[in-house]
Length: 270
Length: 275
Image 1 (cartoon, rainbow over the protein chains, first blue to last red):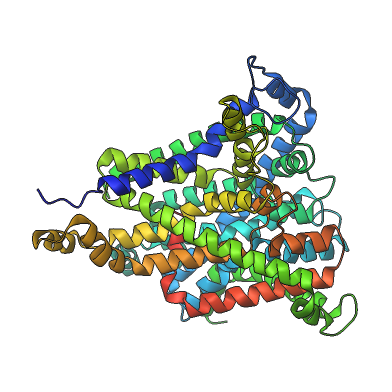
Image 2: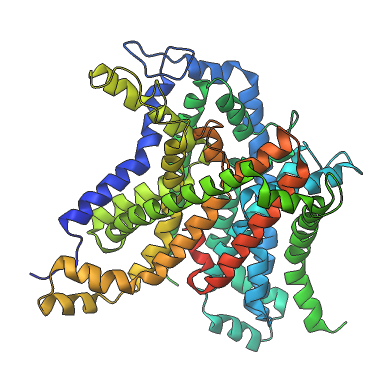
């Protein structure tokens, strides 16, 4: 029988790639149970001391709360700006749409290290005339993260918008609805899962952001990745393994939630 | 003001203003640094072209980026094929293996590779306890570790455009080739691969551009010994302060990437960047 299913060779290769992709995530698990003070495989006895260290050392809890706060604020900024922009592109169909979209995707294609330097420049400039938003402040980090995550939110919202049937908007317009009514009552309800996904991805990207954060924080705004970075650079602290296992589990749950949400939209009668 | 223009401003202006003020204007400040620090002139750009240290970093960066691009593309092609054309279970497993690492932070992933590759890591522990080696192999804190870690990070980014191109291939073309007696291998190489070449080029471009600007993975897995150009910028800002050179390298990187993207822009679709 003729089939275009993958043959044995490509299945073997794909399995190797799949193992390669999961391997480092699995390797973290045994390391997190080592009884030693340094990065090593447990030999014989297992220990929960590194998980205990996460609870005992207040720095971990503080950085988690700070990362949550920054993630939520930057995700709100990014999602709001991206939603307005997406609606503008879709509803008004301005000339030069492609150029406008290309422009807002800049932080995505510019190398992270260049974005980091650019935002470092911004933060030091802001710090010179206020102490709220600037270098090494949590609002400054939230603002910088919003710059970095907005392009992702724009892409997700545009993808959602391009699946909306234009005729429902034309119908609303024909019945006399103005722009605001069409946006709020017709279009936003149709892309609400796109907006939610954009908010979730913006949050996750901010939650794990390290490149820019390294440049714009020093001692006050220590986010969770910043704290992990400090533990990774010098002597590797096995508490990093424990926090990594926690992060991997949380990510798996968020991913499952996302897949569940997408399944639900798929089964909604349109 | 006329209402049509006002509407455009209300919807489009907030984000354009936000990025203009928080991103474009400060970038111009970085450009100015590259011409003014430590002294006005184009000295830093001359240094870029003549400094042997900068040169060796450029060459290493290019070498690592090329290796990572080739490896990520090959790996992504294999798993994308199963993700697109496999049975239902195979597709789900492939999707899981692609998306879980994609959503996990670069730091956690780099740390995972340290746990695998370092002297007391998984691989060396196993090999030593099995008696195959007596001294640990140098797998991390060198260029090999950087290539492994970056390939791992970039495979999902290569999968999305390739998988999208594969989904657009009409299955009937493949069936026709098979029906006329072409073997599975021949159909793959002479029909399927050429039909997905747009996705391959798009993926290569994304991977190469991302690899050029990477500094977290090289900093952790390279252990300061195989510095790439982006890490050099970081070091020039924070360790041996030479902001002008850091700024000049940044400007040069943006120019190189801008040219690459402009040349190959028709192969890039924004939707491919978010999975």
